[in-house]
Length: 373
Image 1 (cartoon, rainbow, N blue to C red):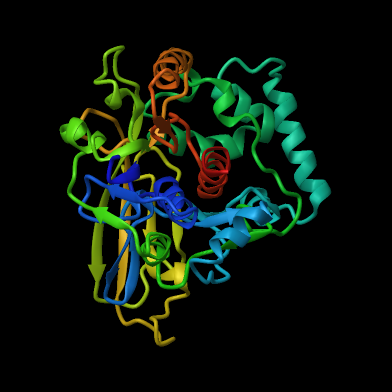
Image 2 (cartoon, rainbow, N blue to C red; image 1 turned 180 degrees about the vertical axis):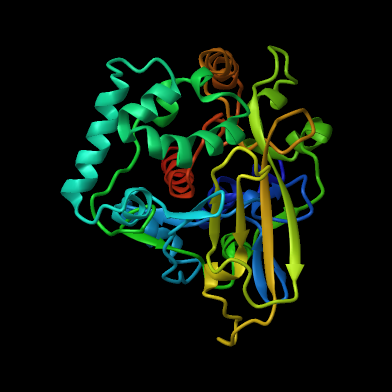
């Protein structure tokens, strides 16, 4: 008999939920993480009373009531609604594209005028079958919005010209002929009071966690400790890149604490021109309305500039490059994973999939139901 029923590799949302459910089912669980902290990419750290999202902004949103009810066990959520602002060379526009955007862009004030303007620009472009992202975007929202609010941002994000990116990346763009700034339009939305780290700590309560532990560097001895492994790391790394490395986009953050109460007045401002090197600036305090735990206004603020970059080994992998080449390579790795005895692969990196948080949670709960009954 091995000392643990399950070894869970990674303490992000997928791993933490599996560990919690396994313990609840009476199983013994060990969680290991190569980082010095729990919670994976949703990790938040307290700076000047502000919960700083260390790996980029995470805003919880879902239409899945089962997922929403599940996370309520571990955290109380505030009523934060994501309403980003786009900054194009000092011109400010509302996101997602809505009547405020169209009024700022063209001076129109009715839905009929906005719809007519978009249709006029689409007709001028005369694109019947979009062959790339640029043509797809113009065929959906016209040239003005594409040039000012999509082109520069997208090219910075992907590191490639829009006419060299596949159309499917931007299959549909939310165009709202209403004055609605709610970006996600989800039924349930918010930020955990106290930060995501506290939420994940509640999931892992009573479970042994070993940090600064690199599973792949100590695979043999760690595998010997448990009957089964739940692996949430990169699938190609698990197999020592034997078929080649999957590609990602990465993100670099420049975070600074400012001795002022307000930098930009909004949690997220996207810089949509191509000349500004960062894609967006996050001002973390506005996720919790600028208030500390005691409900008082905070005197300082923390901002993070985000720079999109090509991923290289050693960088943090963020966004899978789900083009044909990488999708075919992942399919081969998945065949190897399916044949791996007593190992479950789950989560963003193990499934080479861009997951919103609610989808990760749904996937983890589905895995738990199949595995734990």
